[in-house]
Length: 98
Image 1 (tube, rainbow, N blue to C red):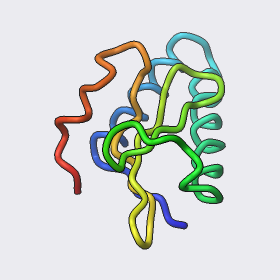
Image 2 (image 1 turned 135 degrees about the horizontal axis):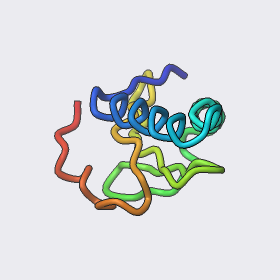
Image 3 (image 1 turned 180 degrees about the horizontal axis):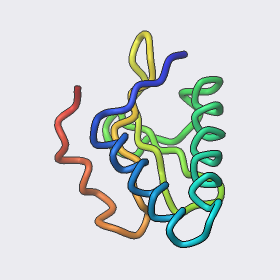
Image 4 (image 1 turned 180 degrees about the vertical axis):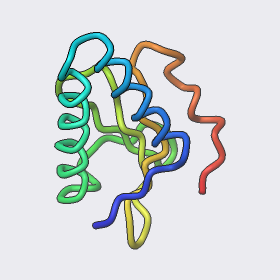
């Protein structure tokens, strides 16, 4: 199944990757890999993650304190947010959906 990122989710991912790479060379690439691994799980089992709010599901990254918040649409998975677990945890609930 195809995955599409909201503009905000894409920016959050890029910010996280940039931040980790500044902390330690190669850590940003590990963040990218962890995110890709999570996306692979989503493609295979989109309904396996628990519901966070209404029809929005959450999938925790394995090695980083982030969660992917997404909705399962008829033809694709829509990533609403790449949210840090310790920063304003529900900020994304006010974000309009595509």
